[in-house]
Image (cartoon, rainbow, N blue to C red; front, side):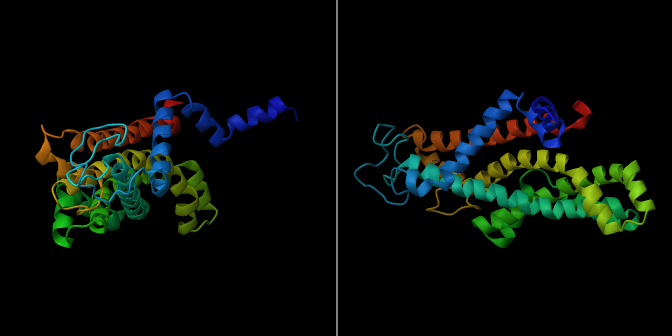
Length: 289
């Protein structure tokens, strides 16, 4: 087989076809690079942060951006740039774990509801409807208020608010795939329900789940920052970006850099995940092919 034929076969593979479509989305590619750089910076924080994020310097209180402190210092003289790097660890961890937890629970509920049907479907979806009835960040605030402030409780709160959307998304896809010819054929030859769900239906739901999970990452990071801003999330002296914004709000007009740089970090990260999600949707959605 010639090299040209091998290359064409690779392009016709699912992964090759996905990459061929995704790399045409320049904005999504740039967003992916930004996210990778953020992840690398968070993982390498102990080695690339120029200062210890928790060590105060009372000789450099509220200094503006300079060659010594690229993003200035806060009320304790701590280097804001170093704290932003360490804060990326907290924000990205909260986003990843909350989305992963919400995805696992939501996908499981959606698969069971869509495949079982009947009263099981009705009961599970009514519970999801009740959860969706609460607007925006309110469910997360309620959960944190019950469990108490802290990063772990924030992860649980954001995950719980993500479950109904994942469940409804997967349930709708499962209902469509359950009627597909290849699923009906598998059922007719005696394939068990477990194998039908795990080997035939679940893979078909993954494109929609991956796209929503990437979009949800941005929402989760923003929600975690909002909870920390109002005092229900990360507690001092954590360098979480929302907590850094909260620390600097009393100095607006005096030392604006305390809020500007953490705010930019949140804005760029959330925007990157949203643009990446749009690119993944265009590359994975078969209706657009």
